[in-house]
Amino acid sequence: MSVSHSSRLNKLVREQYMRLPQDGRVQVTYVWIDGSGEGVRCKSRTLDKEPKSIEDVPEWNFDGSSTAQAEGSNSDMFLVPVCMFRDPFCLDPNKLVLCEVLKYNRKPAETNLRHTCKKVMDLVKDSHPWFGMEQEYTLLGINGHPYGWPDNGFPGPQGPYYCGVGADKVYGRDIVESHYKACLYAGVKICGTNAEVMPSQWEFQVGPCEGIEMGDHLWMARFILHRVCEDFGVVATLDPKPMTGNWNGAGCHTNYSTEEMRREGGLKHIEAAIEKLSKRHDYHICVYDPRGGRDNSRRLTGHHETSNIFEFSAGVANRGASIRIPRQVGQDGYGYFEDRRPAANCDPYAVTEAIMRTTVLNETGIPTWMLQLLLFAPVEDWAGAGGAEIPGRSLRQVPGAALPHFVDQRPFPSIVIPKANRAVWAEQTVAGVAAGGHLHRVCAAESAQPARSWAQPAQPSPLGTPLGDKLDWKEASESPAGHSAGFGSGNKGYGNWEKPQITSSQEPSVSLSCSRINQWLNYFSFHHTVLYRHCQIWESCEFTFPTWTHLQLDTAPWDIQTLGLT
Image (cartoon, rainbow, N blue to C red; front, side, top):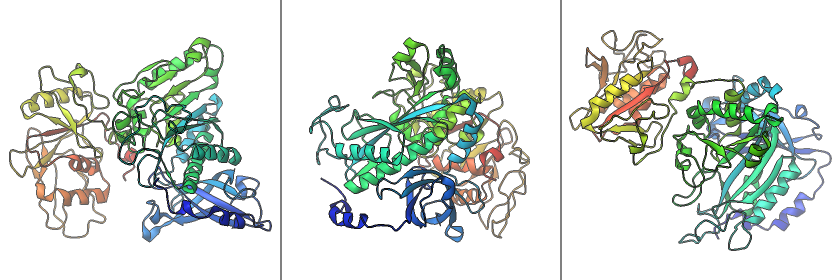
């Protein structure tokens, strides 16, 4: 069995040190979310006396350059304690403290999603939102292979493992029960656990929690899980699809209700909330995993008790739907519902905040900054699209046209259109955004070294003039610092790079030679301007296929302030 070397150390030797008195002083372990948005970090310090409340725990700092949260030249980050638990590893009076991370300027770090979640929860506190989240995870050996699986094969098909009993049906129960007891000791609101459908996959449930405490308690439960697994020498992964093939993925199903839903007759409020969620499916898919939908695209296939990532659905007792209303709730006429879309590695702060924004604050649409994150899994057959709108892109299937397909799983998967159908697809796409959206088209030339261009938006950028013959490109040999790379605002080249050329007066666009693309990308990305999104489009293109056209749509006007890139 593949376990870590540390787990093989003599734990009895450790115990003789753990029993030593502390003379009234206390160990406090600070826990925070790192720059990945998925991992947790910790470090400990000594306090002279036991803290009785979170206010008794002082702020601290850490090296953000070592956690992907800061540069080395300005690396100190603040740890702000927000929630305190008993320490199940060092025992009383020692503490675990969950912290928010702030940057040098006291603004929240990029992966500190608790900051905005807390603001939203304060706004909706009168609705008394309750949450319960079902955290699925998979145990792996230190070699990355599922714990207990044959070294050179697979276990038997799924079926006997869910809530199973017996050495041939469940693997790692000692770990699960140790985690459960540790959470109870710590004061985490853990409420249950069970073996899951795939062998070596487990689930624990946290809740009910009101408001911000849902995220606090789930993150601490995750930290405790990783620490327990460390002692046993195995790894707990929250990957939404750790094993490809005919195996279930891992989610974090989120049960939710407001006070109105829990009262008699609350079913109508549940149905009203589901209706709001149905109109904002793309937004929720973007925030339900840390990669804007890429992780969930591997899991939400419509198989293995999941809904299809492209479609919103709801039903009573339906585990293949986006939203499940428990049968008992349907019979009673009040209660709660379950959102089955969040991935196992979701940030519970992001999930609960999104649900409140949509169902209680009645927000609609998709934030501009999120449009760049809308991603789609590859599909083999578009025949079933039937001309229906593809989520988030307003691209419609053209009758008789060759079927397109998705490529490139990087941040902007390309929609590949067969050469013969370029014109009809472009025409249809333009029609789809006539109401004010933006079309960005990257065209392939008929050469071994194709150029790429981006087309003029349907509306000008608020930063200045639109693209086209009003574009004023200048060369500059000085450092890029201080220069704007945005259109219409003193646009500059960099060094002796080639100037982009205006290629069409009918549809103004700017072309860059293939050999210079990366240099321009680096320059534009450096300035974090309007061209940021165009750069991402280029990055996702497959330059080795000169006969393809890549279409990308934005369904809202440019909003650089919202993008947070200025």
